Image (cartoon, rainbow, N blue to C red; front, side, top):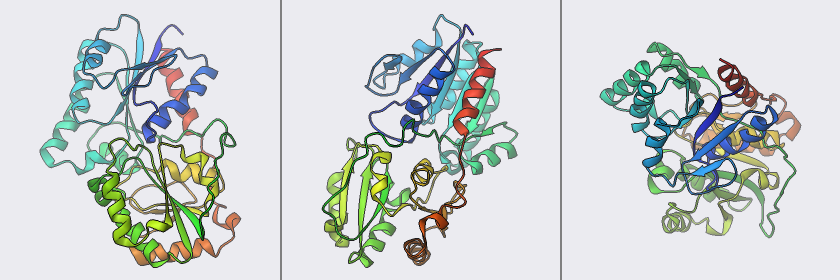
Length: 336
């Protein structure tokens, strides 16, 4: 196997869905002796990880790498659609692109049509959708896509367990990547969670994990907590790994108004913690679903979880092997 696998996407820190996926896949690459390098859309560097510091220079550099490679891009900007098209015109290697959200579905008609056109004209493209809704949409528009959620299990669940102490009441977990007014309202549905906590603050406390403090509007968050009267019922944790804390909690909530899958849901269930999530998209089997943006149904499902034995709540959970399917895809393309 003479080709090298080139991954382009974020690598921790900060912690986010894509960066965690990229980091966790590396032990499986090494196990299969896959030669790889990661171009980190960020600032961290280490062996096999090159920090691009978000500079456009690296997009140009990748176009002219001398070695034979297979490229896997993790899509997160609209201009990437233009880049993939251009990339396939200049280079002859296979391209893998993973679309990690359903943002494409929300584009206005002309922008959406342009993205679809560019994907359809990108040569030697293997497209991966982590969202079943997006996968169906692409198929309806004659674009082949593989439905493959981005969940990669941590290599060791028991490592670096962190305890949360000094809190009253049952603890539950709410986790987001970054907290801004727009994300809080339009994506993560923080108002629904804060309103629920406001009504139940005598018996519940929330562990609120935010993947990156940089770029988060902490002052706005503090104002929200005060306005809902729940500041004393919330423990804030920034820039830490969810799997190190989730064991402290009775359950996890993911009330997103927009979502692609929900990796944190599977992480929680794999660690024996039930998960409650909105029904906006395909969720891991075993998730307790509530009607999107419905506070009453959200509250009922939490009450159900609090009054049901954990083993009964997790009985439908699956042992997932999505990461192995991705490794198999890499091996198949690298051997061509």
